Image 1 (cartoon, rainbow, N blue to C red):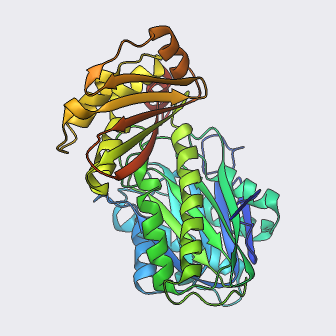
Image 2 (image 1 turned 90 degrees about the horizontal axis):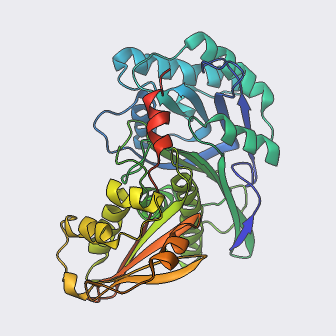
Length: 410
């Protein structure tokens, strides 16, 4: 696998655009994006577990169930189109229809994935949406810059666009996977207020694509947390248009394993970028559980650590309060022996063991503070009970998180 500079336009046959349609209050902000495949693509996806699902989520889930070929993804940023009832579903369909009409060439609304992000409750500004659809169709390009503009257009409280791309060899053929995502707040395991579009030119069976996507999401997007809130709009949409021309992946052979590993890498990198860019965050915080009895135990424990507000505030304050990490593990619901746990924190500034066999060590507070002051900090808890492990990603909790969310609508 080769890491390359790119996003959704990196694979063959994809173009993208981002425009300012006037949806956001600041009318000079990019607020609509589109990704288009040159040919109809097979699609896969995963979506929010929240019972309150936004209209675009319901729409996309329906298209997947019907096994519709997908030609394009359209995203608006500024209005979530969630908790809008049947009128919101009609608005969403109208957005898809406007994009299909703008793209032409026999495309229908059923060939278009939709996504929205922003404030929950308000209806979509349909006049702006329709104008934006035409603008997007006219601005489509397959350049690196066009992909970057699309990634910028889907941002809300994000401070940076998130992109990733890799190339792999399948049957002697170069295959590329590229992706973009947004997400900064309302982020919690079982996906987040996150939208992600991943493109590939691989030839792959629809069911196997879905299996690879679901497995990848499980260890990437489902393993991040910023604020313990699971959104109404979480969507990870994946298109495979087959233009690479590799030998078709129709079974779980060696090529499938290489493809699955690559798409998992892209998802993980996008997830980590979202965690690091959490609202108000100053550092990426990683929790790694090793020595667990089962993978499930390790996943639950890692998520519990990154989701703890007390742990997150300690990380922000560069406070080596390992007791908070042990506490978060203790209420996770997983049974383990606290008298066996070793707890270490590490970063580019070094490492320090805070607890050994469940007891606090005589560590240097000064050195621990230095370790925690880095922009990326990892806590490693060894249960010494088995061979299973899991990693989760989060961020610190700062004053700025409260400021951002206190005036989000205003």
